[in-house]
Image 1 (tube, rainbow, N blue to C red):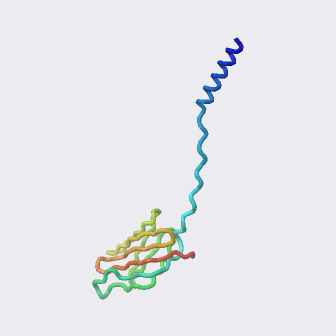
Image 2 (cartoon, rainbow, N blue to C red):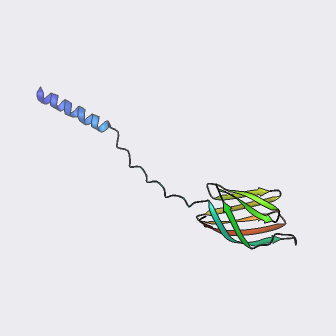
Image 3 (tube, rainbow, N blue to C red):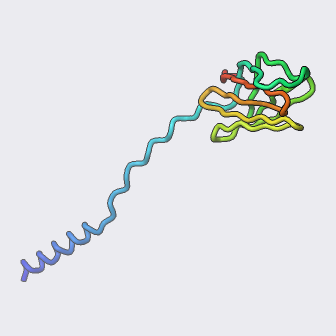
Length: 128
């Protein structure tokens, strides 16, 4: 009888152990911090569309990004407000002007146009 009781208890213990939840996997390490978005971006612009003599001139570009937003100077009186989205897409709008671009790592490039004039810009991030 004692042997039978021992066997039953042993079988019950093995069954309980087999039903116990498996230990959870180790947590994944945190991803490395993303490159900072805010800062000063410097670079150049070039024409890709110029159907009018009044088109803005290409040249040096400096963008001051704060809280993922910046202003792009189109001409002496017009600034285009733009945002850098979490996926790196860059979008902006002012009057009949649109800005569309992409930020990858520390580099950003895009196009800004009103349909008659168009500039392509390429800039690189620098710490403030």
